[in-house]
Length: 119
Image (spheres, rainbow, N blue to C red):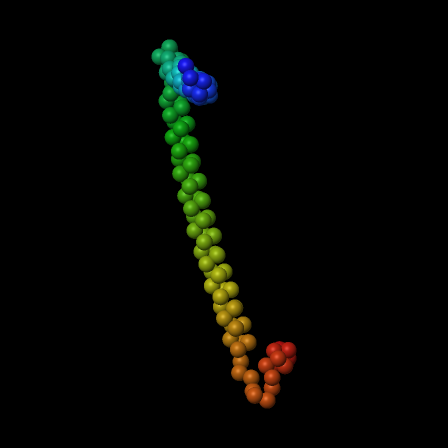
């Protein structure tokens, strides 16, 4: 084998082994999850409390709570947006009033610098 090809194959082999290890760890975790779910369902058939229906009821309750939280946060967001809009309108009116008060006509006898200082 050529030395250049061998030099390229060593890092590729290392990367391949690492990728395979990551994939196999993922498959193992998925198998553990399936085994846990199967154990919960098997417990139900053994005569114990119906765990899967309890879990489903709990999950439904959590979904309802999340929906309520989503509605509440949307209401607060809309309220905050409306308050911010009102505040921006008020600031714009105040700025317009200040601009209108500053832009009064000065006479030719009185310099604009003295008029601005006297206010």
